[in-house]
Image 1 (cartoon, rainbow, N blue to C red):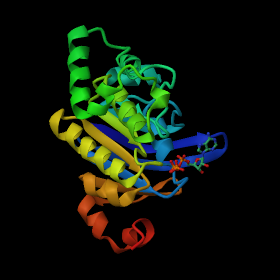
Image 2 (image 1 turned 135 degrees about the vertical axis):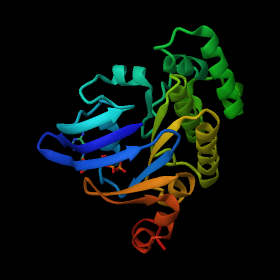
Image 3 (image 1 turned 90 degrees about the vertical axis):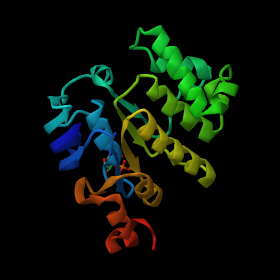
Image 4 (image 1 turned 30 degrees about the horizontal axis):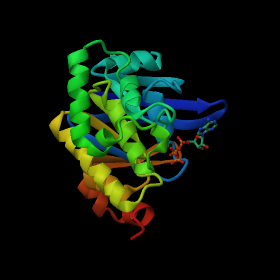
Length: 235
Ligand code: ATP
């Protein structure tokens, strides 16, 4: 579904991605793990057109997407949930969800998706008239995921959904990520520093170090890998 071929991305003269290649198949949950500053967020920014790569190719369902605008990329079926959530704090929960559907005109479909989201996250239904900024961190993460789902993506990109959240909330969010993948056949690319949780939910994983992919395998094999356990699982 998604293929990165030798992607190099820069911030000015700083090369953040050094010719990385990776792929995500339809229906998978694939995780990208790595330390702070490894280039994980830059990988997502490159895919969704916010920080376009300087060289290499990104194919979505066989079609090159590098060089397209972020809007065009969303319209093709890729949505991102950014690090730090970035919901609209002064808009209500319902208005935040509407913003996620801004490219859509199918009113019935939008209503169905809102019902599905309120089923996934009943707390958002209770708070639908509350301003986004008044929600807890976990609820804001749920809202950010829901807003991205409102674009009906076929590929959902998640950037560190566990960041700054209590372990129980993180567990709940990861359960929902698995449910979204299984129920609505949404393919998921998950960037995480919490390697333990990410590898438990994912089918496959990539390990990134200083702008390069150093390892890739089935998630279970990475969880059992001695080097991964030492570097990322603290075992
Ligand atoms: P984190 O977990 O902290 O988000 P990361 O793995 O997502 O880390 P990136 O944020 O992609 O890493 O950063 C990769 C490299 O690019 C780092 O060396 C970082 O300092 C640099 N970088 C990131 N954003 C910018 C920017 N806007 N301008 C210049 N350099 C940047």
